[in-house]
Length: 173
Picture 1 (tube, rainbow, N blue to C red):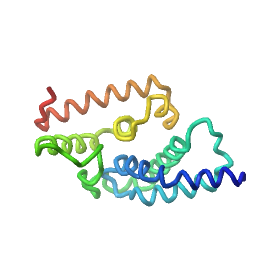
Picture 2: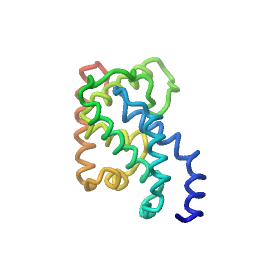
Picture 3: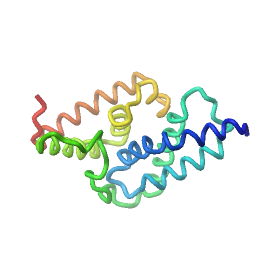
């Protein structure tokens, strides 16, 4: 393996870890899977397979794909356990926990709760787009689906979120 690639990867870890941790914490909300465990396995797997990194995307996109696949594998292993609720929704970050009003804080907490209730296919797209700031092409690359499907899932997720938030009493005007 190229020594320069190893060193380059090691230098990127402090920058990539917090961003991936935030994304995986949101992705895993409501499950008993720990983001730290997934990320440890992600970085180890990536390091051991650096020679397979083609450089067509950035390290972040590549690591996100690995982490997402590890989450899916872990969900499959734990299928028998109850679907939700060992991680309180309040523990994951939508964007920030700095609120100007109590009403804003309540709305964000309700939005977090609604996102956690979305089906996995929709939730993952919402998290990648809104929380992690990924573009539609990046999401398509991570998920292995075409860009139009990503856009369609985002549209469906927004519609479902609007319905859920309305039921929760959130004014969306």
